[in-house]
Image (cartoon, rainbow, N blue to C red; front, side, top):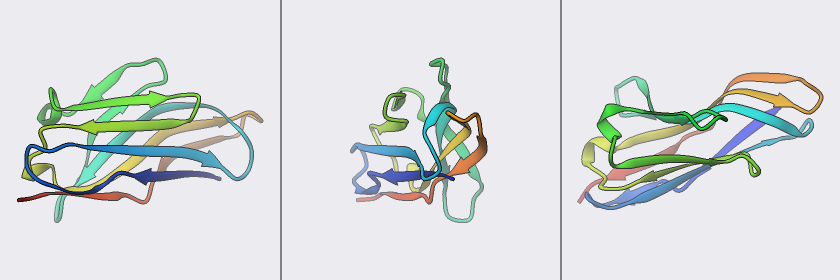
Length: 125
């Protein structure tokens, strides 16, 4: 079993910043590697869409709406992915979900498409 724990969401004024964190852990062994860690956003009444993701090789995918404002990074030693969000806009409001594409354990067991529980971000004055 792999678990993702997100933190860092909250209420911020337009133009402000937040930093989200997502830590991966397992109760059934040790994580060997994680492919593509990333963040998705779901606004009220809308679909859950990709915001940013980073492969374990360092390739970054960013939604056009956040380019120049958001930065995704990861610490492979800590199995953690971060989302630095600057110059926040009201349209950035939503629940932010962490997702990992594939987790490989040291015993070679694999977990696919694991989601976190989500953390809310509200951008409002």
